[in-house]
Length: 511
Ligand code: AHR
Image (cartoon, rainbow, N blue to C red):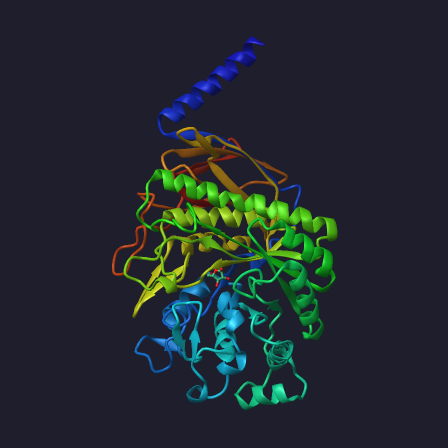
């Protein structure tokens, strides 16, 4: 009894001591002896919409541009995305998808009609980036394609013909048209969505009505190995998931949800770069809501699909702030700071930990829109803090999830508190990878790891961190947030110990 008291007192003293020095103690148990689901690489997917400068200026500049390019695709962007091992890109929207008529974007560019991008700034869309350009771009960077069909203003025939044009190897008017446009062989496109946000910009439908529409479209969409995706709920619209699963689960492979991290409200989103710790805290709190959403939507799905055949796909997520001053409000252009790196790390940990049901996620959006991994300005390119988090986390793609128990300190601000550490772990090719986020912007975390069922011989670590909570990378300036080696990680008495800097995202690998 006395001995126990002494041990406890010593531990408390240690905690007090480390806390006084701005360091907190955490313990993590990793169950390498209880491997879980496969983490689908599609969880590391991206979203690219015809919105602002995501496509034009971001991905595509045209072959005649003086910006170095490969068949019109920016060479710098191609290189950066290849380094990220981007597994999947969703296109052409978003809200744009339900205004997009795919035949406008094929054939000679000079003959393609221009349209108005009604959702995003009312600008002219000249359709020079269409089906061939998108699918060629995916092939170039080695990503799978995910095409979002037009339900809101399209027809079943238009959708079915698009699928046939892209995927069929038979003879038909659509495949003849494809060949005439220069593509002999079909593309291998697995993922197809039937509309986007059909509860809103995709048609303002009720779930009962859309369930029937989804069943109708699905009946006529045919391609080998096709993965059919139903337009899913907005945030906590659990009724939507309930109705869709009840009425149409048997015809779908996946259903989406969309959730954006908005620090305050849609009316008051706040600046991307000018914020204080209260806003930081609030952003962390808002983004952690993703875990509740995924858990609750999954629980509804479990009732109709206990074998988890249908995937829950978070095909839009990320931070949404006020646009950068002086930019077109319809272009949703925002900077990205260390705060966004934490948001990315936390969400990717959540998706990994729900890999039994979450089979895809698509950060919104890949370039120059909302929480981007890349920003471009004319010839210049910036890699954002979010880019470096995706680079750290790519080790989880198609790895096997390992259960993780985290006992950590709280990150407190005033009377509010959050768990300071978020994490997930996986194993691939005999290497255990643990990704951790320290949400606390003031205190580092001293972590001890208890690795069960794994023979440890080597440890290494990498970190994304910065000096300030709102540090960011800007054009023509030295990078303020980047990836570096994690120094304070070691094996001591057969146990791994590491120190996570304050406001950091870390990868620790064990062999
Ligand atoms: O990502 C921006 C927009 O957000 C998408 O077009 C839409 O689906 C969502 O509301």
